[in-house]
Image (cartoon, rainbow, N blue to C red):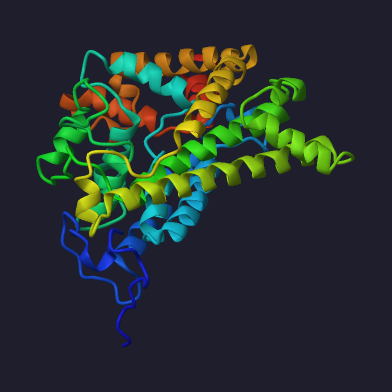
Length: 392
């Protein structure tokens, strides 16, 4: 059998599949796929990944078929991640794996669902979607006979947990206590929580920023949450929209939006490439360890782009995420998640059997069950319990 060919022409500071720190549970290596390719494939074949199809990004699932879901968002992040990784000569499979996995732990109804689960779990050991992703990848997914979870490599799990930076130590972004799921897992598998992650993970993190900023502009315009006139006054968006309107004056509205968003993504990717290449040149890393010890994020936007993005995000927050139509859906989502949590806590016998097997972990089991729901499943479960829907 021909020996496995690992990716060639990677930069010296890229994460190397042949030098992986391995998996918590030992497995024989594949003769046809690198460890990072296997990680990516396991994420794609997971139940949690399929459920992203019916989990909200901004709009509730029944608002329309053309708006983003967590699944389409994750695919867009993965595409941008691969593009950036290719340009920067990083491992594309690892970058794609982290991108595809980064939102697995999100509950139904987007950040609204997460906010309510945080409130409900405040008296116990809390809720954090990033920690829930780790919990899914290492415990809740059951597809293998010899271990729970997907048994991903150190590099993939590190990327999921630390793609936004270290969780402990002097460079940590957050000061609140670490989520319980991360603390629990770190006892048996040290993910180096005080260091930065690989460039592949950093690429996935910034690809997430690029994707959601652009698709929220796209979806917001298509949904009529703000007008073309408002968009023309926005940082970044205004210049892109003005250019496409000048070049394609007779194009229909939806084509103008698509062309402008394409321009925006291209501009942001190019900015990241130039800034990151400058950061790499200044650091002169010789290996991935130099990246982890750098003391700062290397994959980044330029200061000028950050200023413009700040203005764009402020506009989107006010005119999309807090639009009255979105607020109405959020209001309903809050009631559904809170009612489900209170119901299952007060009457655990109404939980499916696999979620009430261990009474000592009842709050966490309830949280795991709700966090795994899609939008439509949560709505149907609420109807079954409270709204006169089918009893089973």
